[in-house]
Image (cartoon, rainbow, N blue to C red):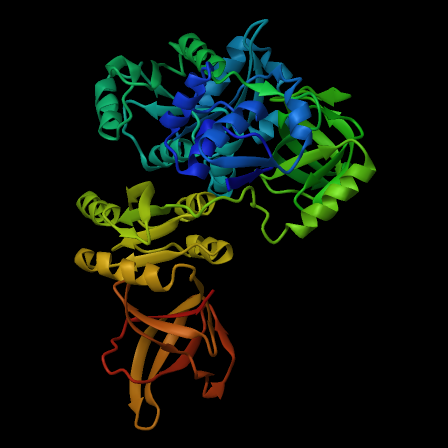
Length: 555
């Protein structure tokens, strides 16, 4: 009996490879044997998907039978490009030059100036939609979800500087999602520019550009003076043509770019349609937010009756403000909408459910360390671990403390984070708690292999919800009680009857239970950040001033 793959939408070769644990090259070879030439990022139509899956021993079940019908009348669509890179390396300057040279700049006021989404008419045959990702931390979620709603990424690198942390994050995120990358080497007008240094550092990460015989397109540019930008656009168009982007002409599916609320218009949302056509009067469902589309505005403020894929528009009529990156679906009738809304509610406990297949043979992992030498040693240790037939799939590695970007990336790819001699920012910890991301910190490399194997064997489905952390300022011993520590709460809160860990230099050395919590000699149930408290710690005699008490529960 064949195993079953259940999907809501047509998938790419990369997706199918992940679901079946078969190499992408093998699937491409099967397609070639059928006389069909395909790329890694190309979506397989239903007939081809069924044939290839059958050859691999799988049966395909489409949850939405409409897909088969929609696939028969597909039309070409424009590509959506995301601009990524480090702050001040020239992403916005590049886009500003493209706008000035290719369109009437005054046309792009209103919503586009606020959200950084632009449709640019290159010529009579080609239009491109650009997303300029903001660098502020509040938009980290948009940046990571953004590469999932876009077709290709342009990574801008200032060659008078270096490949910075945000650049590394951008490259890893685009690679993990599986979209093509084009490198734009900016600031070639600077005298101290060293292009080969950047090419060499990319090559060290197995990112070999075409100029050096590799597969990644690149272009030297000056966003300030417009040098090389026409050639960059030509390469973007060429890459998009290879993707052979298509769309149906029926129900719209797309992503929220931004949303807001004002007294005059109520809730509004800026969207990009990825597939299908949105028509005035359609019903929209975005998670638990919904509504009827009562107005559509283009980038110039003109009202539209319908909108095709890859074009940013502003819509009116939702009953709430959806989050940036959320996926929406449209429905033509209220009856159809109500049916799907009810079905959606049944799945809301598992909103990311897409398919059923055999268990994964990979453990997705993100590694952070204090130094490059430590990072490489840690990588070597972890890549050798095979547990219950699971191999390590390294999503991302870098030096530095664990931040929001790391946690969001872990959430996107259902990954675990392992840190060596690093800390977790309070903002990152909050996101990890909310999204139940598993994070393990270590201080001694040679112990990691054993400890991680033990942890994964015994706790493969266990994570920790951190309530808070307190620092020990003083302590004393009471004969019948044991040690009582005088503490100040640094983050979150201390909660009675939670589990507790004692940590020194990020390394746990004691696990117990928080059974006694006092403020001013009064028993309390919790103590919040910034407040002092007394915590009774039993069966230990080696604590020090400065040790950290972590209150948590297992989930």
